[in-house]
Structures are given as C-alpha cells and as structure tokens.
Image (cartoon, rainbow, N blue to C red; front, side):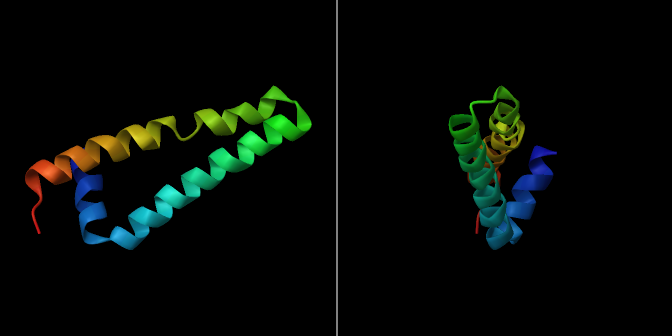
Length: 69
C-alpha cells in the first residue's frame, strides 16, 4: 500500500497536496470544535489523520529512495 501511494504521489503531486490539505483542515476544525464546544467527541477528528500521516511519511521515504524523477 505504501509503494502504491508513493507512486500515486509521484505521478499526481497536486492530488497528494490536496490530501494533505484536507487532513490538515480536519485537524484544525476538530481542534476548534473541541476548544469551542468542550466536548471530547470531536477529538475523534484529531485521531483520524494518524494513519494517513503514517502512510504519507512512509511513502515519502520510499519515494525518496526508489523513485527518481
């Protein structure tokens, strides 16, 4: 899965950037909701991006090592 996403990010850098921006927006909105409403149910939005960010980090490492362009 990491190799596939690395190839996707290499071939489609704009979509990869859009993915990063969407996850950053989820974090920002969730942080605001937790602080404004003081309800912990919104903290799920802070945990949601953990797995995709892990995939992005591993894909970046793979891309740097094996995909040249």
